[in-house]
Image (cartoon, rainbow over all chains, first blue to last red; front, top):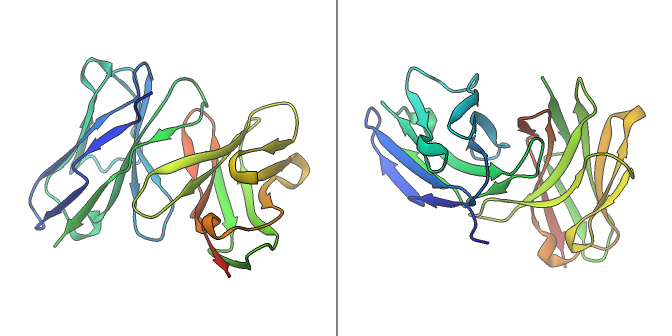
Length: 113
Length: 110
C-alpha cells in the first residue's frame, strides 16, 4: 500500500510569512494527525481528525496555526504568521482505528529565519 | 491526560551488546503502548505495540518489550545490538490520541 505522502519536504521562510503543508494519508484511514517535532524532542500532537471532524486541537496555537481536512481525505496545515520558534519538522500520520498504530509520512522540515 | 517518560536521552552500546531503552507511562485507562524508531530525515516507523493479552511483545528487527503494570513500564530490549540499530527511539501511549516521549538516541559502537 502507498504510504503517507507529505509535501513539501523542506521549506525556508522568513518570520511573519505564511506557509502551508499538505498531507495525503493512507487510503481508508479515518484518523489523521499533525505533529510538530522540534529538534531533539519527541513529536508533539497539534491536531487530530476523525474523518473530516476535529477530535483534539487543544495543543494547536490557534492564533497562528490552522488545519483542515476537507472530504475526510487530504489535509493541510497552515501557519500565518510564522515565528522563529515554529522551526521544526511537521509530521503527518494516519491510522485505521481507535488506538491503532500510526503510519507516518517523512515530514516537512520548516526553517523560519 | 496520558504521558510518557523515557529515561536517558542518549544510550550507547557496543555492537553485540544488550540494548535496553527505558519507558514509563502514565494513563488513566488500560494503556495502548507503542515503540517507534526514527532514522535521520524520515518519519517514525512502528517497532511493536501492546494492546491487551501477552505482556511480552515481539517486534521487528529482533526488538521486544515487556508491559509491567505494577511498574507502569514498557522497556524496549534487544539481546544483541547491530550497527543498523543506531537511530532515535520513541515510546508512545494512546488513549485515543497518541502521545510520545522525548526519545532516546541509540548509538552502536563497533
